[in-house]
Amino acid sequence: MSPDVRDAQVSDVELLVLGSGTSAGVPLIGCRCDVCRSDDPRDRRSRPSVCLRLRDATGQARLVLIDTAPDLREQALREGLERCDAILFTHDHFDHTFGLDDVRRFNAVMKAAIDIYAEEATLDFLRRVYRHIFFPESNVNVSFVARLVQHVIQPCCAIDLFGLRFSALRLFHGKLPILGFRVDALDAGGNVAREQPGPLPLAYCTDVSCIPEETWPALGGLRHLVLDLLRPKPHPTHFSQAEAIDAAARIGAQETWFTHMTHDIAHREVDASLPATMRLAWDGLVLA
Image (cartoon, rainbow, N blue to C red; front, top):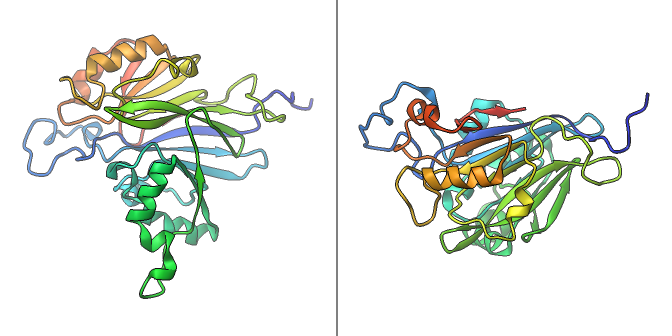
């Protein structure tokens, strides 16, 4: 029997948490606290990023990165990543962008350019910081740089890639407007599929201190939510533990995974205290 045209066109979809830590990572340099000296591997947190791995309608393997953390090289080696078909950026902070130079290896392996998607302010930041990539004609020496194709996106914008729809969501990181992403699989007609495979639909919302009212409806009906939870104490630009739990309860995903955690969060202890549908993420977590 032929598949229904309303069925998802992708398969083997999984979300891989590459890094679940903050800008300083865990353990912190020079810190001797219990978490920084912990022998629980889930307490070792590299800088924040995730990727979507899947097979498209032709069976071709695809990989989409969300953010390029400074630890991207080590994350890619740890997880055996050998391709990158597109990169989506949440915002321009260094812990989300300072691994961009490392994607040139994916260019070399794939012999192809990589499409990148971000708001104009983030692209402007990348062009200023990575002049050697975006303005190679100004380099003193001819050098091996990443090949990137820039695309401007905005909140409420839908980006269809390889049979997945990435919907850009407005979030706030303190006073800074940033993006989160909802991900749904598409059917043969380019509409959201009737049944969603693997971990879909899911949303990735890191570095959040406020979800504006217009964004809440786009977070409905999720199978998985990955959400910012910095530490127990309040912070001006991130959800605290209590705020993250409250937001997750309002969103009501089947499963919520907290990320972007400091060394104030001991995995074993805090994870055991969370509501039944909520867990702490860790580096290497796979949602499939």
